[in-house]
Image (cartoon, rainbow, N blue to C red; front, top):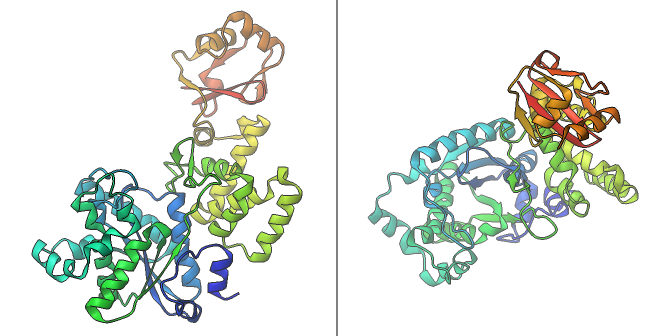
Length: 408
């Protein structure tokens, strides 16, 4: 397949600004940009699914530039149902530095900040040099604006479309960028940039959008229990990321393999056949987790995520380090120890792992309690700091799935 056919097969092309773009993409040599606003200090997996286009097109002979919107981030892209809260300039600039580091490390591409060329434009020049090229009726018909008309939209948000178009114009004139790529929800803003370049310079620019990655119910992909899956390992550990991908819905896993990995058509079709034959083996899910985590965090982080998962499944937590315990037990009930030694029965009751001493004794004598992977049947057993993993954690398991953590 050529690059255009591959992008189509992966489901990565939604709208195309001009039919000639297919030939241009296959030929190579285009400079293009894709952008995001620095509303947080880390990218999440939703960003990752979009920014992978940098590597896909780079490998096909194109030159990627990532724009982090220090200026547009101060304004706020119109949300479907409400105005975005204003973010301070200091926060935006800090977030820019964080995102730039992530993007350079992941994709090795050039990163620019639209604050650099927007900050010195005065209001009169903004209206004369850019605003006069935008027809109000044209702007009102754009989905990104029209969906907010009934609720109301401020002039600040209304101006976002002009600012994004200004970015395309500046990059066209100063970086020889002739194409923009973005999610399908940005189509109105993208075409505004193409129109501005045509009207102001008399030149042609191009664009295509990618479908948004979603779950089967249409909701955004990339959250678990309401929390975003961040690319920063301090926010989302590789183990948590592994669990997220292992548990994605079966009906969407092949789509995610196409969107999020560089596995070939043949490899993905083979995984699809095996997944359909034996979905319980989760081979497609495991391949997805491996490819994404290895790309973002490296092979060692992936192997560590596997180690933690296997230890938790088997109960052999003694093989884990204290840092791995932190990752694997991030969401389990935990307490800070108030004493360095405590009888096991009293420990289970005092820390609310059991409701009564009678219940605690029953669990212990029935072999349902293990500490740091070892079964405990002795009612006189002492839970202590010097028996803790790295002198930091005692991991108590009741039955097969109920874990508790004591921190020292």
